[in-house]
Length: 149
Image 1 (cartoon, rainbow, N blue to C red):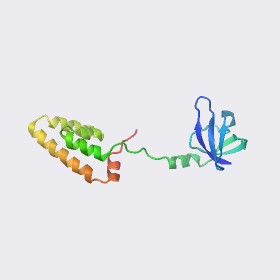
Image 2: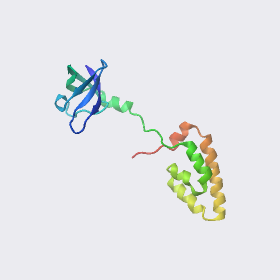
Image 3: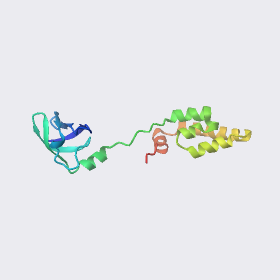
Image 4: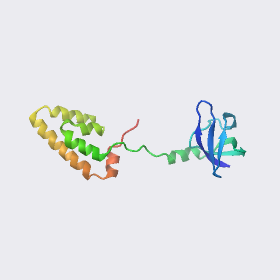
């Protein structure tokens, strides 16, 4: 039978599998015939004995399938929050720090030290506010997505 690993207890090595028949099966570390061992989401082939899975093997395409189904992390930055920060605290560049643009955030703080600088950063922040509100959600998410290293 084929199925997918639902969960694995890292301390004991025991876990659960969801079979194609809709049933759940338990397994122990000794039931695993593959040298890499279980991982959540891996597609597998296994034999059953009651509600227990035995002789468990990874399917050859399970590594590529799990990568293909993996979703990128959702963007935790919101364009409306960025627009409000730009409108109310824009001269200090707070919206730039919020969006991960630390260099221009520091530049805005430095420019804001003088009265002329406040006018410049005020206009800059107003332009950013309008730009964030006009920008599509998809473009905002693409442009200001958090980069994970």
